[in-house]
Image (cartoon, rainbow, N blue to C red; front, top):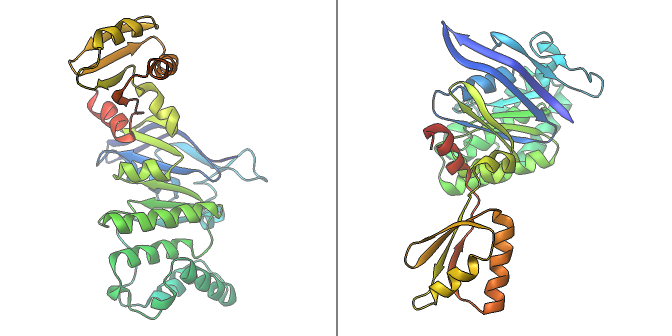
Length: 314
């Protein structure tokens, strides 16, 4: 079900256009990754979605079963703000407060009654494995624990949407993995997640959808496979073992629907008419002729490769 929709959103700061004509749909239970170069407008987009800043033009609609035509976020912000949790890139914690005191503080800002807040805090401490650290000062926590606490503070009021700006920045790979695992579990509990990050591998493994921001516009967005599709390889490479009868193999491959074959010595680069059909034919040929191929490269382009193609115009 459609949850959030941005329609022709522009944002201008001091006559400087940061975002232009942004059209984007976020559905319930999505994990949407927002990627782009530094200064591309990622953080501005997150702040607009979370209701922290208003767009210069356009509208942001929030859909519910009761409001199937959508509610204008900026016109109904007091009604909708409780639906969102936001974790900024730099922790918004109070270092001189304990873990538990931080959660009490941020919960009180949402007007949660004491009994409900106490239950929410207990559940979050258990969920984020901070229960044994509840009385520690926040300044004494490791970077990974501080990030878990910061995310917990964003979840204290049980939001429907969690927005995160660079949640794994400055964390080592192990801590990054822990945070990503936690976000996946949060999503499995029904929370829609919108995350901006420079760690494209993390986005690729965590998110089901991606939006690529380039020159202030949403260049591409949708399911990961949809975003990759225009950049799928139109060829594949096979590496032969030394002494293999290359000419005989080439003559058999030419029987397929092939545009061209490029001979690179110990490797053949094959440009098929239909890469999926030719791959099947190649696999059958290998089996029937008992061929030995050292390697066969059929990788899909990674998100990093797609991003480079867009940004660098490759």
